[in-house]
Amino acid sequence: MILKDKVVIITGAGPGMGQAMCRGAAAEGARVVVSARSVDAIEAIAGDINANGGEAIAVKCDVSSNDDCQAIAGAALDQWGRIDGMVHSAYYHPDWANLDVAPIEQLTQAFDVIAAGGLRMAQAVIPAMKAQSSGAIVNISTLASRKPMPGEGGYAMAKSALNQLTRQLAIELSGTGIRVNTALMGWMDGVPLDYFFNSMGDEGEAFKAQRASEVPIGHIPPDQDCAKAVYFLLSDYSSEVTGAALDVNGGDWVAP
Image 1 (cartoon, rainbow, N blue to C red):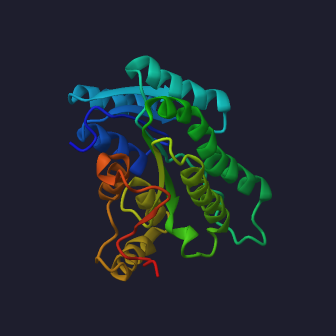
Image 2: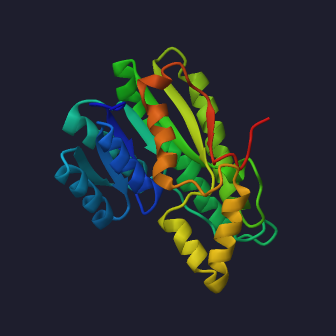
Image 3: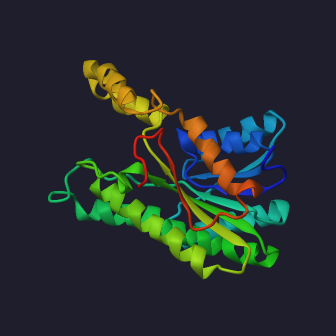
């Protein structure tokens, strides 16, 4: 159990990797603060974790609200007295559109949730981490910020800003014991991607097979397996790693 007794806040615990991270972190021994905007969803996840012998609480949080971000940090401290890790996974995805016609208000919302939301959450947990002289922040980013895709520009721009937030905080928090890293996810097999393929109708299965054949490991990585990279970045096994960007995409994009 590489996260045994660590208190970890996870934002964006919706269908897909967010939920997988919550359950997986608990299985690795973490005490998990499950957070998203949907109360029913997060209470169900926390209930499952507790029913299976883990420890979790559900706290509603909209990361575009500074008050909500401060409240989730306060809930973790009230429950367990410390914050060891924070994973910022919450996001807003604009409509698929090339940037020349993309609705600016949707791009602005993406920046507010993804980049500014990441900063709000960091500002909420950093005081407790500084007091402990330890902590790990992991920002969840995307392959699209490495490998541009038509229609993904707004989402990729916001995630690119989040990538820079990681680098900036890693330097600014030098000497505090707080590490800040990014995990960049590619195509992930799970509920959200199933929705996408199903929306394509009869062409969905063929496109999924094509995409899988293009990934060097030979399949689209399952979201619960991609989440394991996040546990590593939260754990003491990555004690000497900060300011890093870890690509978790099955080799779909390879850093030079």
